[in-house]
Image 1: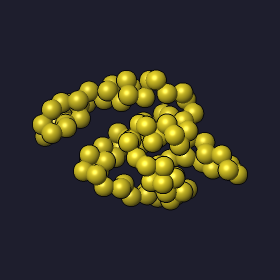
Image 2: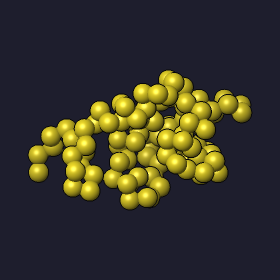
Image 3: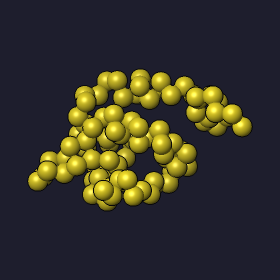
Image 4: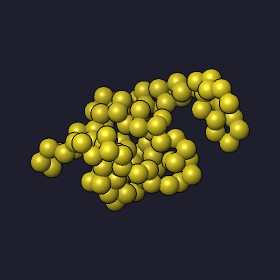
Length: 96
């Protein structure tokens, strides 16, 4: 199979620029509430994913620093896992 730059979603071709449009309305620095809206997750799930390193972010005291572009890249890298409703695993790169 040749990779043509498109994501396959239930047999349909999806241009990666779809993610650009999805994240375009959000600021460069996201909040946990933004993640709730983007992913349709509960507050508890978002914070659990942040605390366990599933979603790329940094915590400085009580404030979460969440870069929109890092999350967008993370979504693209985990698209098949997210589509199946599974929690992505934390990779070595994310643990550093």
